[in-house]
Length: 455
Image (cartoon, rainbow, N blue to C red):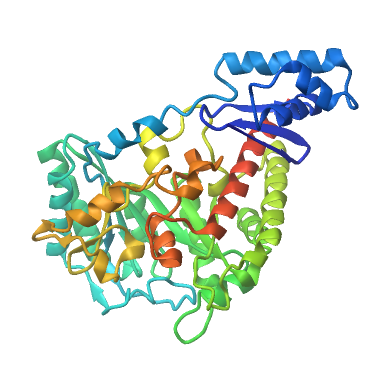
């Protein structure tokens, strides 16, 4: 199975199962179009179909090139994972990451916030040090022989409970030595309370920091105001720029959200790059159609054009020596995710859990507040193994829409929470999100081709 597409003047070919990527001329592209429905057809059949465009010798040469690549396992390769999926589902699983909801409270009133200004369908609360310690103890106890563990301080706004964040990092460092573990702490913040002391601590202790900003001032302030309506852009931008520089432009992201109101989101990405940020993520809002800012199916043509525009501009800037990373275009063609990740995705509900301020476990932060998905708590551990079992079964072959999708080994089946919110089933897909993901992968592969071709 292969995927053929044209982008920015490049004829791209992806062999889906091997991950091989080819940039070909028009002749080979046309030959592969003939072979795609049935790779076993003869050279004579291909020659007959293309006889009006190319000479017999040209077609024969291109056909043989394709056959050689097929023999070398770089075109039309078999799917070696489909037959092993039952065994894969029974693999041993350990917990390796927690999302600590350190604060169910926030000092902003973002219009698209799935956490309802930090409340998550419930009460405002701050996680106590005791609950946080129990969560870290649970992670250590359930991580098996895995040494590297990850803990994300999330909210609401984590800086509203900053002392507990610091105390939990200190506790984690103590436990590392006792249990031969290594904690990688991360933090997501809106920046309102960010100061020099916090920056210094994060630069010492946090492996990554996500800084929330949506792009241009008018876009950001419309969707991320304070509760009394004033915008937050002018307050946070100087802090974020200072923070990014203090981290040598690495190990952070400025992370934004685009909505129906700024479908020209490429301008927001480029605005952030022009400000001086080099690690950028601007992602589509996920919201029910009833919301005025929700992405709609009819928005997709404009969104696809924006991804193409952004990809071309990123190539140009990279060649000029002023490139930047865009999270959704980052792709590794040599290594990439392991087989488990390619098949099962983020590991929500199995390897990755969210913890509420009062210590309840959920499959991920986007399920928090959905009581039917409460897995247990820090005192009793996981008591709903049946729910974990359902998440364990999620993979690219359990979803009909994924089985024949060229992007399946890059997106790993998409987000279970989005599937639940839009279909009522964690083992389905969010179709609008799938369309955008496919386009992002096409752009990412094209960028690799263009930058390899720059010399």
